Length: 336
Image 1: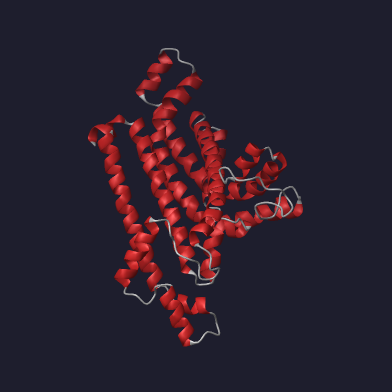
Image 2: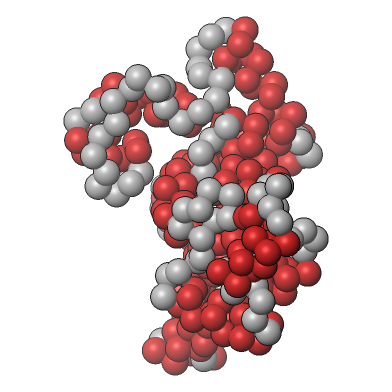
C-alpha cells in the first residue's frame, strides 16, 4: 500500500507542475497589457513602464517562470491589478463559498443519484425504472444556465419562496468564522436564523449544479447494480436466505461502487469548473464569480489563481478517490 501511495503522490506532483506550466504560458500569450491596465487609461508611457517593472513584467520569461513557481510554492499568487489586493486574500475569501456550494451539490447528487440508480436496478423494466431513465436522460441534457433562470423565475420571482441570488442578506448577522463555511459556522456558533437563511440561498444553485452529477451517477449506478444483482454471489446469498435489503445495500452496492467512485472524482472537478456559470447566474460570491469579474477586466492574476486552486482541488480529490479505489479493490494494491 505504501508503494501505491508513493506512486500516486509522484503522479500528483507531476500533474501539478504541468498545471503551473500551462497557466504560466496562457497568462503570457493572452491578449491585453496588464501593465497598461494597472497604470490606468490616462497613463503615460513612462507610467506604464514603471508598472511593468513593479510587477516584474520586464524580466525574461524563464526568470518570470522561476519567480512565478517559487511564489506559488510560498502561497504567494501575486497581487490583483484591478483591486491591488493580494490574490491569495481574494482566493481565501471566495474559496469557502465555492467549496460549500460544491459539497452541498455533490452530496445532493450522490444521495439522489445512488438512490434512484438502486431503485431503477431493483425494479428493472418497471414503471419506476422507466421514470428514472427519462429523468436521467432529460436532466443530463438540461442547460444549467436555463435551468437556473427557470428556477429563479418560479421559486423566487413568482412564488417568493426562496431568494433570487446572493449568499446572505445584507442585514443578517454573520458568525465569527471557525471553518469559514457559513452554514457550518452558523450552526457551531448558534446562529440558527443565519444558518436557515444561508441554506435558503444555497438551495437553488446547489440543485442546479447537482443535476448533471446526479443524472450521471443514476445511469452508472443502475448499470452496475443490474450487473451486480445478477452475479453468482448474489444468487448464493438469496439461496441462503439473506434479506433482500441486505443483499442490495451491503453486497451488490459495494461491488458496484468502484466505477461510481471514479465518476464522483471526475464530477467533482467538473463541478468546480461548472460553478463558474452557476455562480454567475445566482451572483454567488465564489471562485467562479471572482474569475469572471477578473477576466472582464483583463486581470489575469486572479484568473490564474482560481485555475490553480481548482486544479489542485481536483487533483487532491482524485488522489483520495484512487486511495478509496485501492481500499475497495485489493488487486490494485497488489499490482503496485
